[in-house]
Amino acid sequence: MRLDVVTIFPEYLDPLNVSLVGKARASGRLDVQVHDLREWTYDRHNTVDDTPYGGGPGMVMKTGPWGDALDSALADGYERGFGRPALIVPTPSGRPFTQELAVELSERPWLIFAPARYEGIDRRVVDEYATRMPVYEVSIGDYVLAGGEAAVLVVTEAVARLLPGVLGNAESHRDDSFAPGAMANLLEGPVYTKPPLWRGRDIPDVLLSGHHGKIARWRRDQALTRTSAHRPDLIERCAPAAFDKKDREMLSILGWAPDPEGAAHGRFWRRPPAVEE
Ligand SMILES: C[S@@+](CC[C@H](N)C(=O)[O-])C[C@H]1O[C@@H](n2cnc3c(N)ncnc32)[C@H](O)[C@@H]1O
Image 1 (cartoon, rainbow, N blue to C red):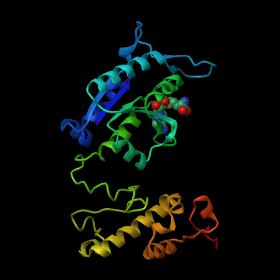
Image 2 (image 1 turned 180 degrees about the vertical axis):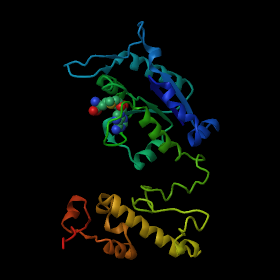
Image 3 (image 1 turned 90 degrees about the vertical axis):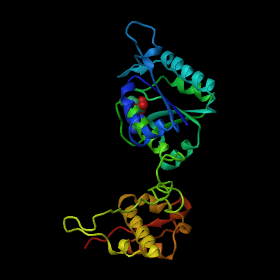
């Protein structure tokens, strides 16, 4: 997979040389090209921004440098035969970045990232490239960062660990929180390793039992408990078929009941509010 990142802070992307992504680069599974947007400026001050049309605070990134930088990255990637590119534009007004989207992006041969600063990039840049390739405007959460580079690091790491051969154990992401399939979009429960006793704290007996069925059940109950506590919205949206009899018993202990009225709106479970004594 090829990744291009166009930014005014190339050094912000240095972590792409470290750990899992760094190893994927070193092994040739990832070809990462970081470009300094200011190389495509032609004035003395290397200007990349200007005042917004319509007034208001802040500055807007100019079309010219972005268009020339993206064209240059595209020309290089096409010349080197990297399939069909997709443009990733981090923005708080984008669609939420999820594990499902990470999986989708990991199946693409070539991603080009356009992290902005200031108030964002002149809209015409996105509109222009959307006529040539898929454009994903993505938000990594409901908060506003000063720039999109941190979002690029987040998306890159989530995508890179899904690439074949990047994780030491190919099974590692199967049970992740949000992994499609086995855990039905539940959060992963707690994990433990040696030593068996630390500061008086031991390991749940079941994990030492060697009984695979009981361990799987315990992990599932932990996932249900954690999801119920931290992301009840995920439980609400789980189709009834996602849960077996034991799951439903656990959900009942956690206070959940099927919601026949909500089902029409995609909410299959509800938890009656606790009655105050
Ligand atoms: C100061 S923000 C611009 C915020 C813009 N005024 C708005 O409210 O949509 C500058 C840049 O940081 C990046 N950014 C900020 N928050 C982000 C988020 N939650 N997800 C992804 N990118 C974000 C985007 O690249 C954005 O263009």
